[in-house]
Image 1 (tube, rainbow over the protein chains, first blue to last red):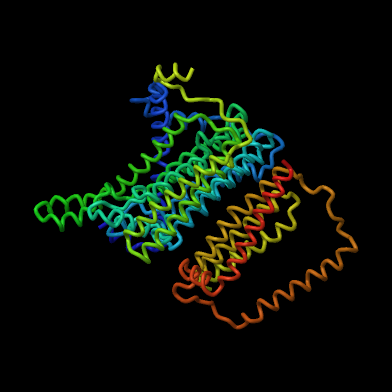
Image 2 (cartoon, chains in turn orange, green):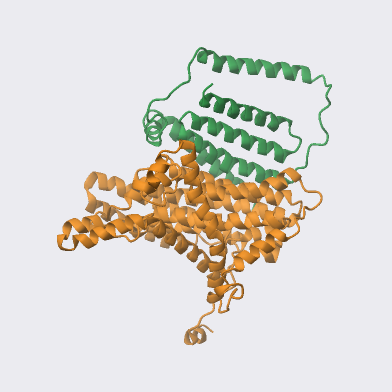
Length: 423
Length: 167
C-alpha cells in the first residue's frame, strides 16, 4: 500500500520524502538528545540535572526552546550584516546534508524506497566533503561578530577542523581499502560477511577487526573534534572566549547554532555506526547462515532475520544514541585540552597512527591476495610488532620529546594506597 | 528546453556572477566567499555531467580545504576592505582591458572551437567513476602522479624547514 504509493510518486517528490524521513528524524531527536545529555551528565557528575519540568524533566528542552525563541533578537552594531545572517544558515545546512548518503535501513522492500537519499558511488567521499563544509558557518560567525573573542573562536575552529580532517580522511581511507567501494550501502553489506573470513556466524563489523578498530577510534576522536565537543571545544571555551564564535548571536540565530551542533553529533554518530558498527544490523550475527546450518532452529533464526530487517531503523537509531552517549561520556570524563596539546594530538599522534594503519591495511590486502588468508593475518601480526618496536625506539631516542610543558592536571585517584605511595 | 539545459544555464550564470564577484567585491572576505560559490556551482556542473567523483573532489579540496585556509589567512591578518580604490579613469586601464580581452579570446578559441556544433555530451557508463580514475592514475598517468606527490613532499619539507628556522 505505502510501497505502491511511494513508488508511483514523481521522482522529485520521492526524493523529498526521503529527505524528510532522514532530516525530520534527525531534528526531532535534538530535544531528546539535549535532555539525555543533561541528565546523563548530571548522573555522571553526581548531581540531579533538570528534573522539574514534566516527568523526569522531559519537557525541559521544550521550555528552553520557548525561552530561546522569545528572547530579544539583538544585532550588534558594526557587524557585516550579510555575513552575520548567512553564518547560522551555513552552520545549519551541512549538519543535515551529512546524512545524504547514509542508509538507515536495508535497500530492499519498503525501506529501499525511503533510504538513503542518494546511493551514489562516492558516498564516503561525500561525507568527508560535507563535514569539511561545516567549518564555514563557524568561521564566518566568528568573523561577522565584530568581536575579538568570537574572531579568536572562529580562527581556532578553522585551524582545528583543518587539522583533524586529515586524520579522519586517512582513517576512512583504510576502511575504503578493506571494503573496496566508496558506496555507503556496500560498506554496510561488506560488514555482513563472516568475521575475519573465519567465523561463519558472526558479522564482520569493522570495529571488530584489528585495523578497523584503530581506524574507528581515530575516526571517533576526529568526529569529537569536528563537532567542537569537549575536550576539543576550544572554539567556544567559555573560560577564555566567553561564548567563542557565537558570542554575538542571540535568540533564534543562537538556536540555529545550538541545533546544528546537536544534529551534527547525531549524524556523525550515524556515520560512525554505518561505517564501523555494521550500519542498520541489530546484532553482529548472521541469522540466515545460522538458519541454513541448524535446520532444527531454522524457524527461530528466520524470525530473527526478518526482525533484523523490520527493526533496522530502531537498531540504527539505537546505535546513533550509543555514539552520542559516548560523546557525553567523554565530555564528562576529560578536561578541556590546551591549544598546543590539541594541535600535537592531531598532527603528531592521530595522523601518523592513521597513516600507519593505512599502510598496514594495504600490506595485509596485498599479502592476502598473493599468499592467502593465513599469510595475510601473519603480516598483520608482523607489522604490529614492527610498529611497536619502532614506537619504542623513537621514544628511547627522545625524538618525540615535546618542548612544551607537560599538562599539570592529573586525574584523581581513588585508590588511597596508591596515592600514599606516589606521595 | 530540457531540464538539463535550464540547469546548465542557471549554474553557469551563478558561476559567472560569482566569478565577477571575486574581482569586483570590495571586501576580501566577500571576494573569497564569491570564489566559494563559484567553485560550488562548477562542482554542480560536474554533477550534471555525471562526473560525481570530480565534483565531490572539487568540493572537498577547493571548497573544504583551500578556501577555508584562504578565509583563515584573511581573518588572521584582519584585512579590511580596500578603501584606496581604483580611479575609474586611469590610463593603465586601457592596456589592462586589451590584454584581458586578448587572453579571453585566446582561451575561448582554444576551448570553444572544438565544441562547435556538438550536442549534449554523454559520457560512457562508468566513465569518471572512482575505479576508472584510480586505474588510469596508476597505469597511464603513473609518472605525473608520482612526480606530483614528490612535489608535495618537497613542499612539506620546505614548510618544516621554514618553521624550524624561526624557532
